Length: 332
Ligand SMILES: C[S@@+](CC[C@H](N)C(=O)[O-])C[C@H]1O[C@@H](n2cnc3c(N)ncnc32)[C@H](O)[C@@H]1O
Image (tube, rainbow, N blue to C red; front, side, top):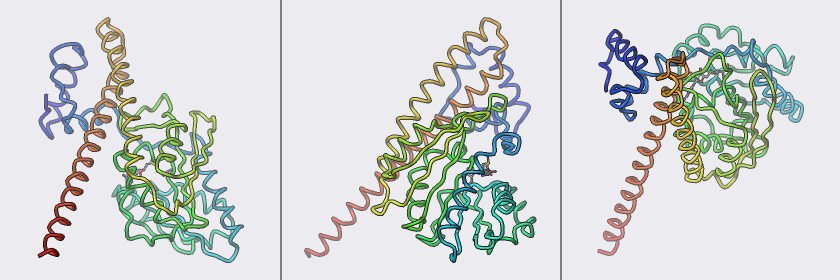
């Protein structure tokens, strides 16, 4: 079943039929590989509201500030370069400006986000950030930072953002981060929630436990330090240093795929229970929509992982063909 693009009334009619009759023909017709449907469910099951950090937990920002204070103290005559990836509308640099004191003038801050609204907001408020030695704004995919100086970042921050980045990008993302890290003192700092607060579920989010983050960072070749913090929801922070030999993108991809399949199975089982509850007349519409949106999202990510695996296999065989052709030329 493929809702017509840009016809909201038709989409709502489909949604109403699905909710009203969840175990009927409509559910069997759902094609979860249909990416249009993935975004369709996301729109209705999870309006992507930014989490209000001030009303949630300050730990996510505090750990970054501690890390920065340590870097500034350890290197008293250097400029410290921060790369804030998925920076949103700049709540972290504002907090840094308020918390670090005069040494903030030694911080060169690079704020990166793919969202036009966030980037335009930051540009229009650029004057707020003049306390940094430099404040640069880039509109980018998190995994696309190739033009940043290799080895030039002292601190790469992913604050409250990993759950939003599609996991099929993680191998490239962490590989690039590793290349960007200053080899001796550089750190990656990932701070996020193990699960979203119960009052603001988002089907688009793929949350990870601290143990899962530790496992895939180790698979990549990092030696991460991961800690847990009980706040309104459990928050983890993971720190990783530069890996001189580079990270293992294949290993991280395999581990993440396994974990995503586990999450998909769990979501399907939960959806089955909710199907039954709805059929009994229970008022579980919202939960049903969120979990169905999660299934669509996980399927979307797994499909993207398979597509990128196929593409890299094609590239590898292309590379082999080219080298065989090259050998032949040499032999002639
Ligand atoms: C929940 S907000 C967190 C913002 C900020 N780090 C903070 O703590 O306030 C997540 C941000 O990640 C950005 N984002 C999500 N996926 C991204 C990607 N693949 N590349 C770049 N930015 C991304 C979104 O646009 C959004 O601004």
